[in-house]
Image 1 (tube, rainbow, N blue to C red):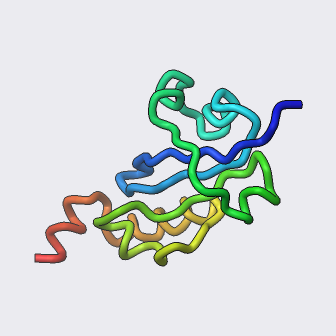
Image 2: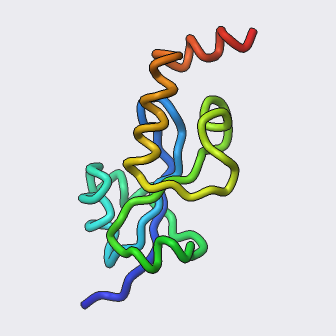
Length: 108
């Protein structure tokens, strides 16, 4: 069995920037888990510092907030969320702001 590595990929989910993190055995498997093309994952995936939660739960997706915008309002700094929990939080946010433009305009 291949050695486990922790992979991460910054991406937009429903218009919100997130860092998806997973400990798994290959970039190919990571691509399958996040439902992205392998070529995209191969080119843009990093191998970051190990996060203990991910190490003890291999092949499970986790999320950290992105660098700015709506993500700062939805997620806590440095907190790790389970992928499904993060999607639910984004869905709740989208009930108030259906897209990033609406959120931006509310801040004026």
